[in-house]
Image (cartoon, rainbow, N blue to C red):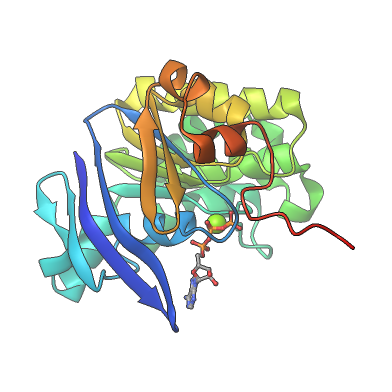
Amino acid sequence: MILLSDLHKTLGSKPVLRGVTLEVARGETLAVIGGSGCGKTVLLRHIIGFFRPDQGRVVVDGTNLTSLDRATLMAFRRRIGMVFQGAALFDSMNVRDNVAFQLEEHRLKPPDEVEKIVRARVRSVGLKEDDLAKMPSELSGGMRKRAGLARALAVEPPPAVMLYDEPTTGLDPIMSDVIGDLILGMAKEFAVTSVVVTHDMALAYKVGNRIAMLHEGRVQQIGTPDEIRSTANPIVRQFIEGRSVGPIVPVG
Ligand SMILES: Nc1ncnc2c1ncn2[C@@H]1O[C@H](COP(=O)(O)OP(=O)(O)OP(=O)(O)O)[C@@H](O)[C@H]1O
Ligand SMILES: [Mg+2]
């Protein structure tokens, strides 16, 4: 479903991706972990076609994104839902308008159908009818994340691919677990293929059919949650145990 082969990308003077190869099967959820700044968001941006690799291929559902012209790429993107790091709602719009945004922007559906889809998606993420009129500033962090999720899902047909960038950052463990349930629910309800970028190992274990760790521009290890939990790879061990990955410089 998603095939990344030998991706290279340098941004500024920094080689961020240095040969990333990954495959995500249809309906699978892949969790991607790795230290801050290692290129997780950059990787997601390649899958949605915001970035073009310097080298390598990005194939989503049989389409090679690197060969598409701008218009075709824009149309293709509508089949991919992305939940951005920090939810990224439009602050000047209420929840209903945020969720309806894509459907209205592309005039894909008649108004009564837009309303129906918006309500169904808002319900799917566990928000209430009363929340539709609320502005983002009136929502808690968890509600914002849910609204961001509903917005990413509000395309018709539902997205074939969902990309989540740090969906639980800033949430308490219980709300994080709820978001994890929602991600699993989405995967089931819509049979989507998902990539979940996270620092949150509890979430990675919960939602990932497999977990991949990015390190120094490459996939350090990929495996099932059990394989990652019991890994002998020192870099992965260090990360999942929450120890500093960098060299430790002794003081004095
Ligand atoms: N548009 C850009 N232009 C230049 N450099 C960029 C750009 N986007 C990202 N980078 C650089 O690429 C590297 C990887 O960034 P990225 O945002 O993918 O990290 P990340 O793994 O998502 O980190 P975090 O966990 O903190 O979100 C960083 O060094 C960053 O400064
Ligand atoms: Mg990031």
